[in-house]
Amino acid sequence: MSQRVGIIGVGLLGGALGQRLAKQGWEVLGLDPAVPLLDGMTMCENGSDLASQCETILLSLPTSDIAVKVIETLGQVLTEKHCFIDTTTGKPSEMETLGQTLSGCGVEYIEANVAGSSELAKRGEAALFLGGTDETINRCRPLLQALTSKRFHVGSVGAASRFKLVHNLILGLNRVALAEGLAFAEAIGFNAAEALGILRETPATSKALEAKGEKMTKGEYYPPQARLAQHLKDVRLIRRLADEFGAITPMSDTHQSILEKANLLGLGEADNAAVIEALRSRNL
Image (cartoon, rainbow, N blue to C red):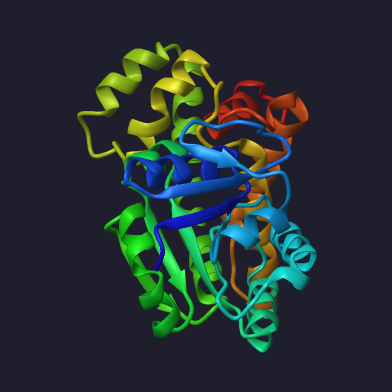
C-alpha cells in the first residue's frame, strides 16, 4: 500500500484522522467544500482530482446517504486499484448495498467505524470497528495501524455499522445519565463542579464523566469534540434498527426526546455534552 491517502470529508473526525496520518508520515490529500485548508493536508478541488491521485480513499461523512452520493460522482474515475475505507456512521443496510455495488465494479470497500471523539482520534486512542473481508482489511493494515492499535474486525460489511450503534447507544446513555445526575445535584442545592469532584472518587465515575463532566459544569460546548446533532442522528438510527429487529430500547426512546429538546434549544452544533441543558431547562 502506498503511503498516500485521500480523505473526503475533513470535518471534526475526518480532519482529526487526516492529521493523525500526516503525523505518522503519510501524504494526505483532502476534499471538503466547507474546509478549504487544513494543516498537514493538500486540499483537492474535486473528487475526480483526489481519486486520480489516490488509490486509497477514506470517507468521513455525516450520513450514509451522502457517502453513496459522493461515490456515485466518482463512478467514471474509479478502477480496480481503488479501495474505500468508510468511517461514516450510517444506515447498515446502505453500507451493505454500497459495498456490494463497489464489489461488482471490482472496487474494494471496508467499514472502519470510529469509537471515540475527534480528540481521541487525533491522538491515536480511538477504537475502530472493521467490517469487510479479511483480504481487504489486510490490504489496508498499514493505514489502520497508523490510525490506532485498537482494531476489532466484527464481521462483513454492515456489521461494523451495526456494532457502532451498539457502542453509541451505551456511550450516549452514560453521557445523558451523567447529565441528569449533575442537573439533579444542582436542582437540590449542590454545586455541580463540587459534586463532580466527589463523584470522580466513587463507583459513579466513568469515562463519560472524565470526558464530559467539566464541559457540563462549566457550560463549555465550543469548539465541539463531537456534535450533539450527530448523536441525535445516531439515536434515530439506533431506534430504527431496533424496530427492524424487534429489540426493546426504552431508555434510547427517552434519550432521543432529550436530544431533540437540546436541538430545539439551538445546541445541535454544540458538543454533545450540551445535552445537560435540556435537563436544566426543566421543560421536556
